[in-house]
Length: 401
Image 1: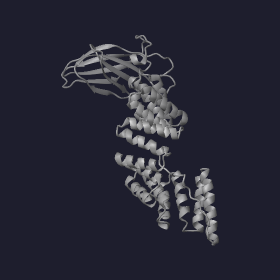
Image 2: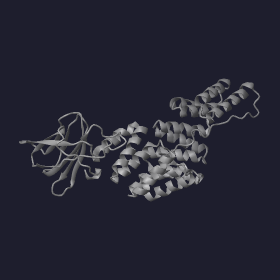
Image 3: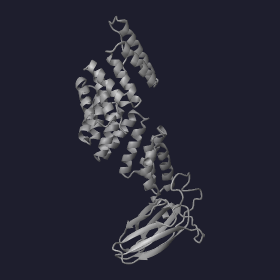
Image 4: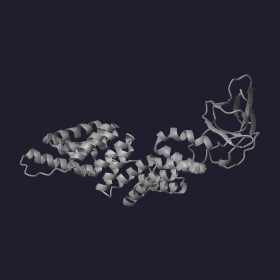
């Protein structure tokens, strides 16, 4: 995750210098009250004070800027944009207002407008490291990674202690497949900020790309310790366990990732069951259909109450041909080459969500049946629950299924 700066940091205090008008002095006092409320994250209270400051002094650029910051924290981005724009109208040299209006455009995915504002902030204040960092993020979103790198590097030159810029530059290096440079930047970010959960998560991603699974798991675990609500770290650690065939640990992490971010269910849900058998017996009835014009395996559950996990292996080489899940109530067609195969299946009512793998029994079923699929032939396989218990449930490791 990339970090925009400086949304809540640069809250501006009003100082009365040589101002005699009571309204202006009162406006500054109320603005500063709002600043204090903002420090305690009382954004609505701060907005009330900033609005009063503006009523007392309609040309109060700082109060408009501060109210824009508070609106941004509440996700009211159009109101934030309006306030930053008014602050800039009142003070065309207000570099911080350009920077934070750029941040708002970035959140609204209007990268070109964001870049224009960051560039103006830099023109007004060439030593603004945050504006360089933020413009780098906007370039990154446009996939202009070399420009992003240049801006992150300038942000680091201006502020060598800017952990966010190191983290963001690491992301750019990762996208350019310069993994060692990415690792170095994430490590530097962590040396500057040992509590930087996102940097641990990002470094874990690069360790995974380099095949360093244990280092990746260690980094994801530390990211989770620092931020137990970081769904992406659970998801990525689950991926690593999955690749290591530690399916129970993968399942646990995927479940937690989905709890924290339900939007991950679509991504994880299609992947999770593919190598995890369900704890019920099953058997297959195979129908040979002559005269078909293509080689297609069609799976039709005979009852719509079960989820099915199917695996096909080549009979002679034992090479895995395909894995797939059929969610209850659906069917599945899979084009495969002609040949002889072993089909394995498992079925059950749930495919993730329990503390243990699809239940508490710790046992899985599989069925081994050899089928032959000649050229120009379709197979339709009807799969049914084993209601009579004629197949014995076997306890096997998940990676044996």
